[in-house]
Image 1 (spheres, rainbow over the protein chains, first blue to last red):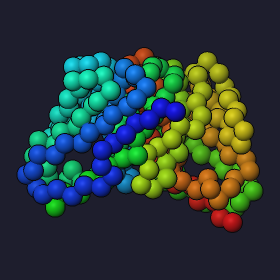
Image 2 (tube, rainbow over the protein chains, first blue to last red):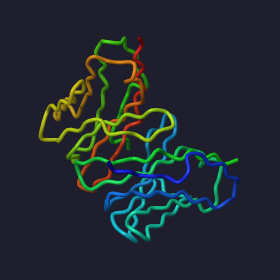
Image 3 (tube, chains in turn red, blue):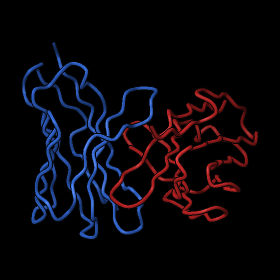
Length: 112
Length: 111
């Protein structure tokens, strides 16, 4: 089974902190994605990557950056956390069009 | 611009009956449509997909119907079970491989 592992299930951070969310997949997928899920807003794409060291902005990239130094790992960085970044963050990987994504279990981030 | 719309935030059905979840889209370039199921505090899990060249795909209790002329798809669950209670997301996928999700419909199946 494809596994996408997110390093933390729950995180509490203070406003202004730099936050790292880590995601690792074990199926050699080229494509990796970061979404956030908020009530009434569904799943919104933050950033995605088609290959190592490649990244593209999604629909809501402001306040975030990403890093993909190795194929299996895709990190989401909140440069200076703010309360409006309190959310469920979901990482996913895929092997191509029509195959859908495999999601991790999510990280519930609370910024206080 | 919301490319994928799920206009019903919630749906409640009785166990054993049919659940019908609806989805509309505006992007004619989608090649695939997918349905995901999500329980609280878990990541979404893939349920079923359909290619844009087909009008029906079936997998056990789950059937997805696609009406391209109306830009509408629906997920039918027959018979519904209490364990089906979850949030269901519809998504479209085009050549860029990005999935564009709707806002979700919360299904409650009552025993």
